[in-house]
Amino acid sequence: MPRFWTRLLAALTALFVLILVARSYNVSAQFQFSWPLAVHPDGQNEGLQIPLNTGKSADMTNAHKQGQATSIAPGTFSRKIVAVGDLHGDLGNAHKVLEMAGVVTEEGKWSGNVDFFVQTGDIIDRGDDTIKLYDWMEELRAQALEKSGNVISHLGNHEWMNVIGDWRYVPQTEIKTFGNPGARQQELMTGRIGKRWAQNYSTTSRLPLHPSLGEPNTDYDPSDKSPLSHAAVSFVHGGLSPTYPDLTPFPSKINDLGHSLLHKLQHRNPPPAPHPPNPYPGLTHDATPAEHRLYETNGPLWYRGWALESEQKVCAAVDAVLQKTGTRRMIMGHTPDFEKIVSRCGGKIVIIDTGISHAYGGVLAALSIEYTLKPLSEPSSSGAKRWTEREVVTAVYMDHRDVLAVNQREIEGSF
Ligand SMILES: *[C@@H]1O[C@H](CO)[C@@H](O)[C@H](O)[C@H]1NC(C)=O
Ligand SMILES: *[C@@H]1O[C@H](CO)[C@@H](O)[C@H](O)[C@H]1NC(C)=O
Image (cartoon, rainbow, N blue to C red):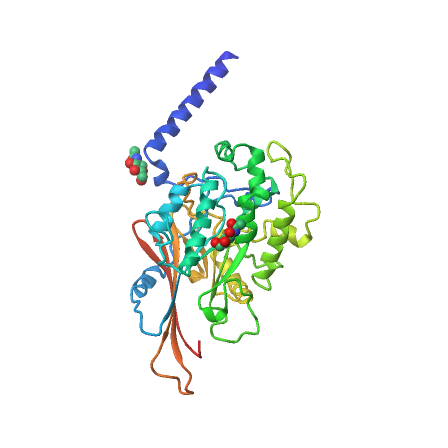
């Protein structure tokens, strides 16, 4: 059947040329390509593999106006947090985003202009700069500490995949940066990168907006009746599902599970042969049911419900999770929108993965949260000190900023 093959070849050539032409005319900028998102090894969430692209929130313009009126009065406490989502092996774009958001200088050093820099996981896979990015994160962590700043790092599903031996999204060119697959595996298990994951990365975090709530990752105390009891934000890679049974005490329950599972995986002896071409190794035989739940599609690493479910459904469910975790909003990566940071339910849910790696080509974006607690001169009728508490949540892009939420309230008490 030589004719069949000639036709097939002609069709493929035409397709190839079409793709080349489309790329050179920046077609991707005009209409959205859907890139495959990582598929959980169980394949349970295959029906949900579409990047989301919801409309702008209605109150955006109003919030934008309010966001401009920031003034710093004496006695005001302020805290600035910048968060960035999935980096996927692209040091160049990561640097651009951190510089744009004021976290680092042009030379890539800690600027001292923010209090917390948070990264929500998925530094690895799809690109080649794995080693450089993890090295840079440790440099920033050390530089930040010298200027009383903080770098808060999370493990995404891709960090976990690699330590499990699920190497479906590892480019061959990236393996070469380690030398060979064996050297790479050793590095991620008990080598330099593996030790950093175990020591300086967690699965989720609770970041206080005000220091009276304690250090980052202090558990929420449900008996706390202070007006600041929920003055905190949660970070996680995938999402804190409303039906995930191991949410509390938050965040230590999830992080303890993450810690014990990581230890089991990193000390698996012998280490599993990477998949593919070898079969998917799964978790270790001694992983507990709760450790399995941590890595399931409803668990904090893979959950996509906050990004993909209807507005009505997520906004009806979000308050219960915020209540249980002692937070006012939750911030996550994992499900990209290539055009913008997505704010839902008035900023209670913020999804910051914009596919900034060249592997996706999404918009370069970072999230900024500015918190201020400003004393008011007049005490309340009972003599208590009064304060204006304000949070401004902004999406920062190369050429503009969008204020996503402004929340202001008056509170009483000694803080
Ligand atoms: C494609 O987009 C990039 C970045 O926006 C731009 O620098 C380049 O000139 C564009 N190419 C074409 C052919 O329009
Ligand atoms: C974790 O971070 C601290 C603070 O920068 C640093 O001293 C330590 O060496 C890091 N751990 C690893 C394994 O790199």
